[in-house]
Length: 335
Ligand code: TK8
Image (cartoon, rainbow, N blue to C red; front, side, top):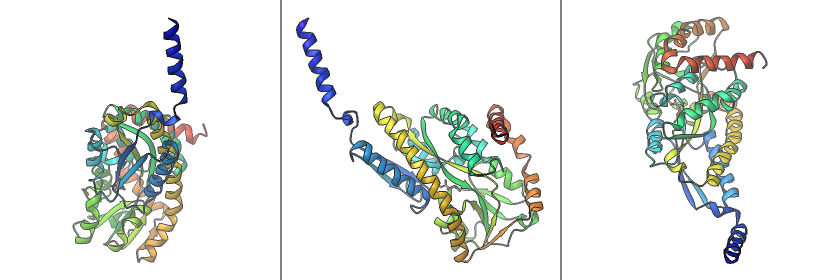
């Protein structure tokens, strides 16, 4: 009895003497993205690495791949689900086939500004969506920012709804985007992001839509002439981790992943917002002709796409659409 107690005490003492990193193994974490390293996602990944360095005594390495080098958003996400890749920073839109509720973010003109997006994504609604991802073998560590999307094309300046008629617009692989752009009179073509530059260059498509920073860092100014501020949708980035791999990490390691993804979030969002205006200026310096739409034209565009909410409510999940609308109503009433 006595000996056992002593042995136990010795064991506890030695456990207490171990460094805090005892539950942290050496790790190499592959992370991929469809955008270039110069995109604010690059800043976020750097910030995450700095956080790992501090929390793991330099034993964790983020092995980052850019410009869809490991496949597009959907392929990389499937690699996470099968446990062959640790992480991806992906737009939500190409993942609606995995989790239909993600389509809620693609509803046109949903968020009015950055503050609304942050409040919804970092609040109860965002947590509810993250929870849904676990059933698909995916842990969402944080929401980063892709941002408000704007239209570029090589045909003509878009100053009114009719200018969109027949334009061959690449959209993300997602029926809500397809419908939105069909309603606008365009010839909408779903395509993975990694193929867009070449498709624009060869003239397979006339147009695409993305946030200013993505237009800038993807060099679309080389193959597109006109840029119109439409802000027709806000795309979040999810910072996803393979659940199969996550489950093999110690609780301490899992916490490091979550904390560092959130440290990355602060840096990534700030970089995204700072760069947005600079990117707009840069693509104009590179020759793109930029215009904003008259409020009456914006209103016509909003009206043309309004039916998309009803058409896709059942697919997204009516409860999800209603929860989003309730959360936005509460925000807008100052709640
Ligand atoms: C990059 C994509 C891209 C997205 C798109 O992988 O597909 O247009 O906006 O940023 O996630």
